[in-house]
Structure formats: structure tokens, C-alpha cells
Amino acid sequence: MSFTAFRRDDRAIEGLPIRLVIAFVVGVATLSVMLSMISGVQSFGVSELDAKPDPDVIAPGHHRVSITAVEADGTPVAGATVLVKRGSARLDTVAVGKTGPNGVARIDIAPRLGPNQAEGTLEVDIKPPAGSQFMDRRHNAEILVVRGA
Image (cartoon, rainbow, N blue to C red; front, top):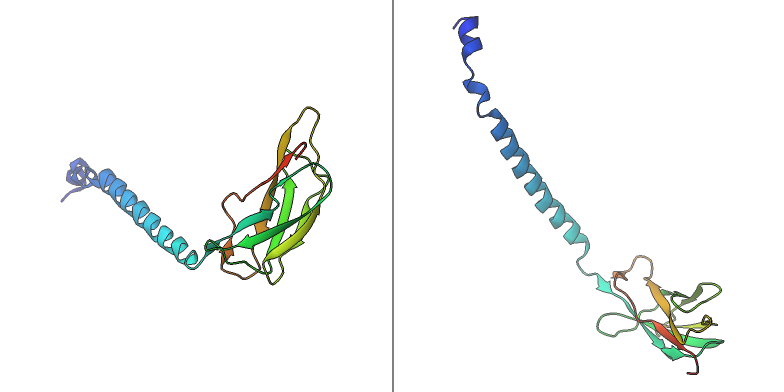
């Protein structure tokens, strides 16, 4: 086959672009499935933590609140760090406590409400014990601060 005959032959590139697109789509889909399988392996045996404040409704001013860190089935979790932060109610600083063997952290807080504010909330976050099978991704129970409660 001479060079001019080869130059006029365009059959080789007719199907090439579509084949590349198909290979790319199949490769991306396969990679997506593999990555979802790998990330799913890490989540086996992981349990969500929740917070149970007591009391969960308080008035503005100084209070000692007991917050229990619990698993999904209600079992208390020892060694978790509990944080109480301002929400729509005000706090001067973030209050921090660590749960004891019974899963309870006792935290001193002094929430305030703004002028003409009848109620507000304080957010509760839980940091699981290091190296545990727990996580805290969902929103926890809040502490409601009510004027005159």
C-alpha cells in the first residue's frame, strides 16, 4: 500500500472517538463503584452517638447540666468529650466536659438571652473517645433556654 493510498484511508479514525468516550464512561463508572465499596468498608461497626441533657429546659443564669452520651440503643458511652456552644442563646465561652464511667458529663453553664428574646437554644456536640467505633454526624438534642422557666 502506497503512502497516498494510506493517506486517503480514513476508516481507522471513524470509530476511535466513540470508542474513547465509551471506555472513559465505563472506567469512571467502575471507579465510582469501587470507591463506594472501599469507603463503605470503613463504616462497618460504627455507631452514632447522641446527647441526652438533663435538664433540657432551663432559665437564663448559672446551671449545672448533666449530659449523657449514648449509643443508638441507649447504652451510655464513657470517655466522650461533650461541648455546649451558643446557639440562639448566648454563652461567654464553649463549655466542655468529659463523660465518666456512667457516660455522664456534668457541665457548668451560664446562658443569657438577648433583649426582647423570650427563648433560645444551646447546641450540644459530642466528640467520640479516641480510637472508638463511634461517630457524631447527626444533630444532637439542644438545651432550651426560656425566660421565666
